[in-house]
Length: 208
Image (cartoon, rainbow, N blue to C red; front, side, top):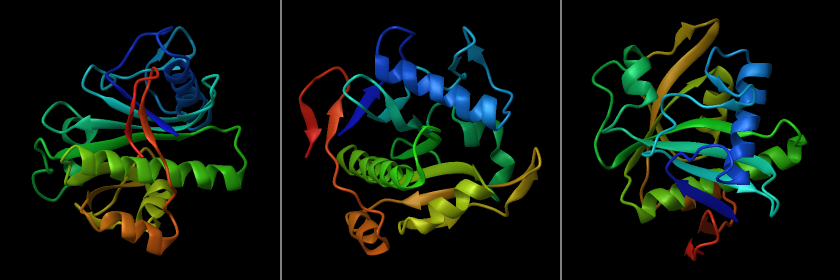
């Protein structure tokens, strides 16, 4: 099961969200040395963690975080449009049907095989969420490590510009086209994983 949480919530509102922010701090600040805000010395929370964000989280019943991604509407401030517009050769895609995938985070406690399973579940969940909410494209900014993974997932990706060197890492922007065929493309690439989306907090499932 993948839980989705519409809107950022402060510490203590959800164990799954709290543990996601803790792992984001471990991965992006402690391991990757990003210069991003940290709250109370343990939660990585930036200016895009707002009421408009949507979080897809793979977590245990006790809230243990396995992996997560954040979705941001592009008709509001988002990373590509606000911080890295120069990565797109033209105006970066925006609109109510264009959302940004960001902060893909896999728990550093997972072994390689489980990391792959969680990554595939989150990818499938993101596509399901897009199809259910009229999202026709995702955009994202990623360094070379994540870019290669994103391209290998099988969905229809298109670079928005030439990758550039940013903070010592080759970084590029992509748009990912989502259609009724995207699930089949994931299956063909071996990156599809059956998942159920459920609203965080125990509400009725969104989809099976």
